[in-house]
Length: 106
Image 1: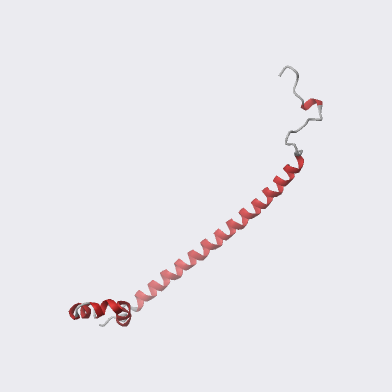
Image 2: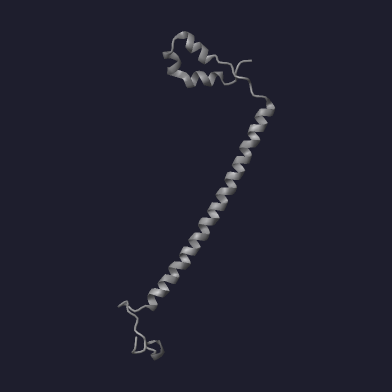
């Protein structure tokens, strides 16, 4: 049986087949492959569908992870802004409570 991909082989070889000597060109262009059976095609199609399904599932999981990370980043930025507002501009925190001050012997 002749390979169903025979025409694509010739197209893929294109210039390469023309540059080879005639005997090599014929051998390459007319190489016989076993024709795929219906069962082989169905198995390959099923395998591709499974891979696509896993790929879609992985993409959904990654999107959810990115979404959650962005929410966490947004919360952390809000918390950082709150902390910056609590600290005075000078950067040093002055204690107004006598209990917070260090005793003189330190």
